[in-house]
Image (cartoon, rainbow, N blue to C red):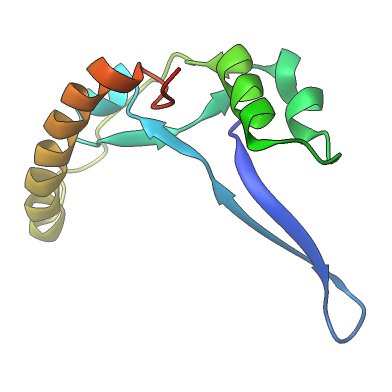
Length: 115
């Protein structure tokens, strides 16, 4: 399961509208190998109920939940086709970001959340 921040609002027609954004972290090793500098923040299934608890809590508590239940699933990759030139150009920029992030991991740890 990927961690996200979300909100539910009512539209003018009284329909519920869900908005969400995935929480990202420094790239998992398999993702780094392919030139990306970040990955979704995966949560172990044991932590889903605590992560999804909608009661009010301070941000420090939310970070504690992320740290406690962070998961690094094994990822498999395959190449279906070569990437187009526009991706190759972006990949070079992402490799630079990846290298910068690898240096940042020394300060923040692998989850991107300083202790």
